[in-house]
Length: 157
Image 1 (cartoon, helix red, strand yellow):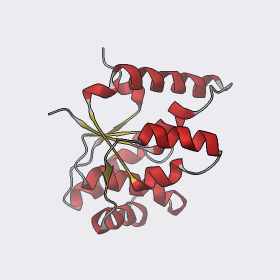
Image 2 (spheres, one colour):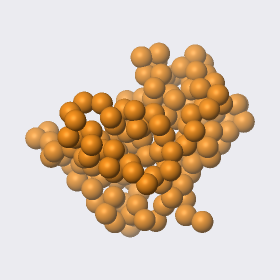
Image 3 (tube, rainbow, N blue to C red):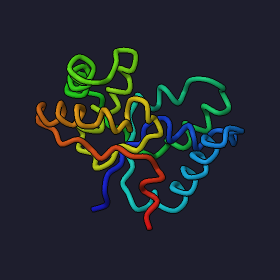
Image 4 (spheres, one colour):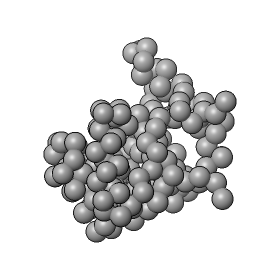
């Protein structure tokens, strides 16, 4: 059985966006395209209604591209366990209230037993300084947290 990945909104956004003029963002977009073309078939992909909601916002044409990328990817249910864990990550953890949606992404991936949470959000999700506290809260709630990483880290050797 292939490893399970929760695709967070930034991955879908980088896939659908026009190439950025910012060097770092452009590199992330390129790495995401490479992962999507070369590695995604090695994993079972999942997302959530939260990602669909976020992907629907903004420019209509780009939103349609994001939603097209998500079509066919199973959506994980945002249940009460997800909401409770997301709340705990804000109330007892390092994630600020203004990033409660980011905490919910972590909670969805954790509650549903994903192996990886794939994201480019390095401020509140793939943040090494926050991982110890996030993982402790998830484990104290009875869940094993996924490995949180960027597409670059899953390009393989």
